[in-house]
Each structure stands twice: as structure tokens, then as C-alpha cells.
Image 1: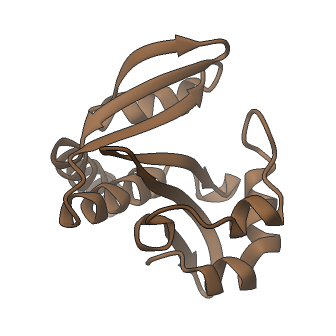
Image 2: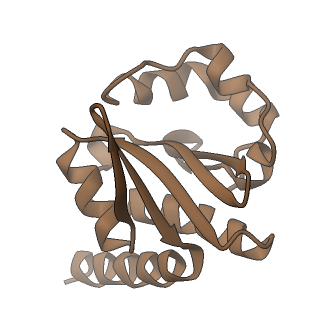
Amino acid sequence: MPLTRHKALRWVARLCEIDRDTLGERWTTSHWLHDLPGKWELSRVATAHGVVQGFAVASRKANAVHIHRVGVDTPARGKGLGAALVGSVANAAEATGGALLSLKVDARNHPAIALYQALGFATVQSVGDQLLMHAVSHTVVTAAATRVAERAARSTR
């Protein structure tokens, strides 16, 4: 579901809690509530029984949609939620004319890099301890849908 400003304000403590496991700078309330072009239309949040399980924060930057932050609560990892969130951002980007997606990921975050590569992202630049990755939104939408469907099929076996 979209992560609106109102939802971010209501869930900021939980968003910060999930974000604590993220490598690099920790986000504070001001990061979560900072307005950026297209942020509230593009960002996504996943909940289960009213509790936030994960998020993907994105905004428009020049001719691309940049994914600033993706986080999934530790017990919910490995179940396709990260792929679903990134796919949902890509779908929203595509629906609003954003063909190119970009993101930065800590070079030590091997699980996230593997996920992004599986979704069609490729490293275009290494800047310090960060990798800059790009993908085409349609490719990510398709790859995410396939990955989520495969995870669902495995969990029903």
C-alpha cells in the first residue's frame, strides 16, 4: 500500500525500529517526514495485522525514480516482501512515466545486492562503500511478480 505522509507520521516509531538493521546512516523522524518530489505517490509500506513489516521509500530525481530506502522486519525476511515492495515502487514509477529506477546499497549488504540483481538492477558505479544500481521499471515489475509468485508456490508445498 502507498506510504503516505499521514501513515509515516503514525508509524514513524515502527519504521525507525525496522530501519535500525539497515547498514549506514539511521533514519530519524525528520528523514521519514521529509517531503521529496513524488515521495508520497511512490513509497510503499507492507503491514500484517496492522503492524508494519516493511517499507520502500522512493522519490523522483531528474529522469528517474530513486529508491532511497528498503527495509523488512527481521522475522519477515526471506519471504518475498522486499521483492514485492520494490516491485510495487517500480509499478508506481511505470504508471507515472518513470522508466528508470536507481538506488544505492551498501557494498557489504550482500543479501540486498542479490535481491536487486535478481530484480534486474545492475551496478553502474561504486562510490565509497555504496554501489549505485540502475534498472528499467518494467523489468523490475516483471521480475518481482515472478519472484513473489515462486515464493508463494514454495510456501504452499
